[in-house]
Length: 309
Image (tube, rainbow, N blue to C red; front, side, top):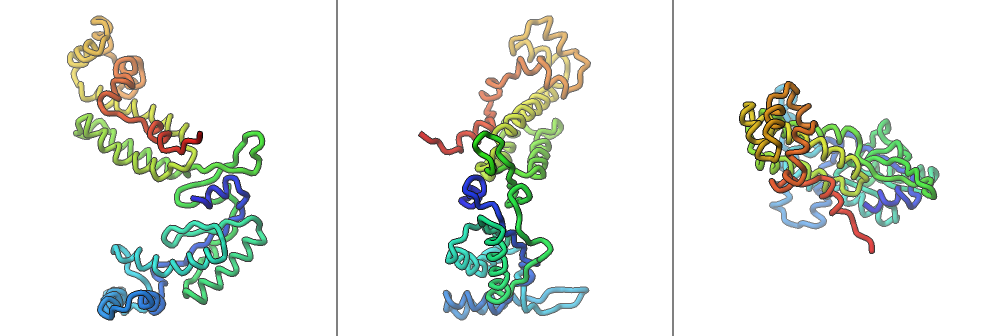
């Protein structure tokens, strides 16, 4: 993510944001097949790719032949699209530009609006003439970091002394909401998971998410999310204990005096309130959760950060 580092501190803060109009529907077959032929001389392979590309599409019950576009949903689609856009990558590298591209989503980072306009105009001509790809003018333009998002990331200004004009990488709000919704679903008290199975399923979700956003500044938000998730787990445990007598016995085993355990097991508080109260916070402690296999998302994120001596 050198380009994102450039935005954060190197002054490349005028961003050419390009949106390719209906990319997968607009890829010209002849251009794509020519690029493949330049590397692969096997006639059978080319024939099979051509047949796959030109498989007819059903529109209003009638079959229509394709002359452009890549069918989506196949493992071949991203491969073929990258063969075409590899030409773009090489052109941007040849010009010495800093850029990010993921599939058909790409942006170029420059040091001034004048340079950004020049790059944008040259890129428009290159895409139109060389690759025969249309640009969505309404969604394309020159952006500043605070108004720009890329691959689920955004940029916010730093407010530390001596860091004026610098930005830090963050995760956009909608991605946080989706992530929390997934964690909330897996910690529904009614799901019939054992505690170990629930932790395993949670880890499958959060580990990949944290890996994906490891370059962003998310430590404090993860700390808060960790606290919320631990309370969700306590809530699940409290629900699993079900009857008051079982709750009393378990609280006693966790070190609570007999009379206090009896009172807590008969509480009128709701399960979510209990999970956040001393009833469970002082019994189902962090150390006990860790012994059962719980891992902190913030701790995992911190271990992924580069260490500087």
